[in-house]
Length: 274
Ligand SMILES: Cc1cc2nc3c(=O)[nH]c(=O)nc-3n(C[C@H](O)[C@H](O)[C@H](O)COP(=O)(O)O)c2cc1C
Image (cartoon, rainbow, N blue to C red):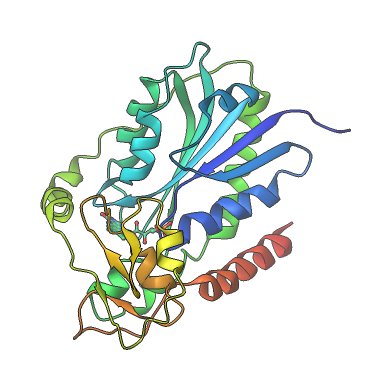
């Protein structure tokens, strides 16, 4: 029988780790009506009324939810009627209190996080900042089973008559990650355009939702004032013309091809598990 429950998956993703999982979720809700969209600053918040549950997905950057996702939630006018939601974050190593911070922010808008999850994903910063470590290049081993179990949880939330906000507990060990939280956010990387490699395709200009790249003359120009250093431009430049510095021209890139391969592998594992 056709199920009319409406789910909206709203995600923010830099290089693509979060987007990949959000797209897998999209394929998983067989009998439910599901829409998926990347967040953007022109989003029509009135549309939220049409959905029974939101799935909110975003990366952990410097032990917090990504700035773009927090700004997106901040801009939502408080909803008249409380809305059910499920949140997940992706992280390279440890998400700390990211989901707690996010769930509290959502509550101010009448969005109740009924369930949440964390997925260990390729470390999109680590691969550029440190010598590549193999465990930082993949999703966690058990990811297929975890996605399956989280999708079951969401179906349960949809079918339940209650809407109960769950705020994750404060994790005391995250005190040790305060230097990362404070210094990481304060530090401004100097993204460089390698003019000898740039072919002027404008991908960086079109891709950047924070409008950090603009085309002025022959080459794109970068302004760091609104940049949250998601490194999408570095990873996805088709000619590897954007770099953190001229010296560290790492060859590893998390681009469309890279994520397509990982997505196929996870979907295969999910099929095998069914
Ligand atoms: C600027 C930046 C800061 C990050 N900070 C953290 C962090 O504090 N803890 C962590 O575990 N991973 C951190 N990561 C890794 C990301 O959380 C991880 O790679 C995530 O899956 C990226 O998702 P995306 O590709 O959708 O942007 C950071 C990545 C970036 C780019």
